[in-house]
Structure formats: C-alpha cells, structure tokens
Length: 60
Image 1 (cartoon, rainbow, N blue to C red):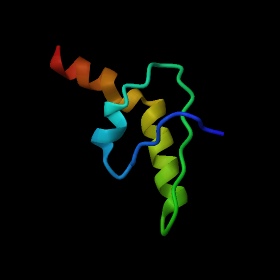
Image 2 (cartoon, rainbow, N blue to C red):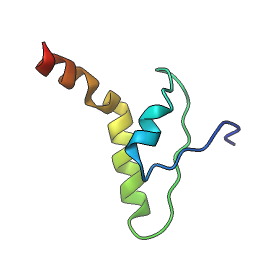
Image 3 (cartoon, rainbow, N blue to C red):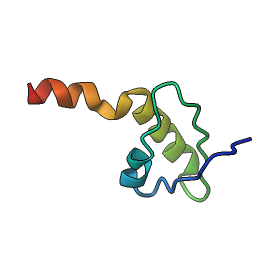
C-alpha cells in the first residue's frame, strides 16, 4: 500500500512537481471511464522519463 503523498494525475504539472527521483516506486490508480487507458498512458510516460531525453536532445 502507498504511504506517501497522493498527486492528482489530472494535472501533469502536479505529477511532474512531485520530482520523484529515478527508482521511486509510484502507485498509480484511476477510476471512471477510460481509467485503465489513462493508467497505461501514464505508466508509459513515466517509463519514458516524461520524454526528458528527447527534449534535451532537441535543445542541444
């Protein structure tokens, strides 16, 4: 069970503001229409490190 703070993933800004270090275990849950798709998309985004590497490559 998750003991840490919860973040409303409706706001990607709030999720990113959590600044969870790499390797942090995150628990993701959703409810309502499209919940499973939303969780899958968020997990994918986290696994891609929020596309940070691609952003840095474009900036260089």
